[in-house]
Each structure stands twice: as structure tokens, then as C-alpha cells.
Image (cartoon, rainbow, N blue to C red; front, side, top):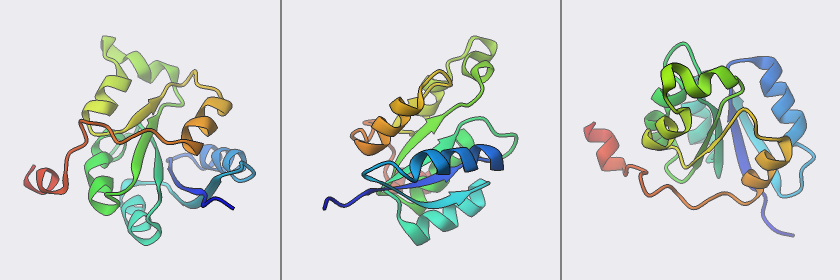
Length: 143
């Protein structure tokens, strides 16, 4: 039996975390190993569980989302970070492209609010190669 892709969800809203857990749990090849509601909790859980993929909400009122990427990179350097937005309005605020910001911040992939559950699961089951823009540990520590 193949080893499942381990996933950690970082999402501030409990109802969205619950929905993602319900969606991921029965999917073959995926194992949800942790859930966090903020960046600090996520960093600790990422170190403890060493997930293959961190599914991270991009839109937060405090340090999380884009600001959490370097913290999570240090906590779980092996993890691929897949950012997403559950709010279509966030994706083009002030004419800016959230996906571009996510990749520039060091995320490995981005799911738009229009993505289907099937698209999310497919991406998690076969994670992409690490982003070529991914900073290494030394770059993060010297930033």
C-alpha cells in the first residue's frame, strides 16, 4: 500500500477547517495530520507532524497567509505550501493578483476560490514540484 501524502490545514475559520477535514479524510492517498487556526499554532504543529503539504489560507487579518510562509518554511522545510483563497474578492484586490503574491512569497502552488474540491484533492494527491522561487533556510534566516 502506498504511503499517503500527509496534509496540514491552516485556516482561521473553524467551519472551513471542518469542511476541509470532511473533504480530505475519505480521500485515498491523503492523511490529514494536523489543523491550525493561526500561524503560531501552525509552526508548532508543522514541526511536530512534518506534513508533506501545508494547505494555507492566504487571507488573514494578522501574521498568517503570505506572512506565514517564511515561518512555515523554517518549521517544515520539506513541506510543499499550497495557498488558497476561499474569498473570490481577495484574489484581485486593488487590481493585484493573489496567486502572484503567494508564489512570490514562497508558496509552491495556489488554488483560486473558483477551484473545485476535485481540483484541490487532485493537487494534494499529486503535489507539484517545489517552486523554483522557494527560498532556502539561509535566505529565510537572513531576511
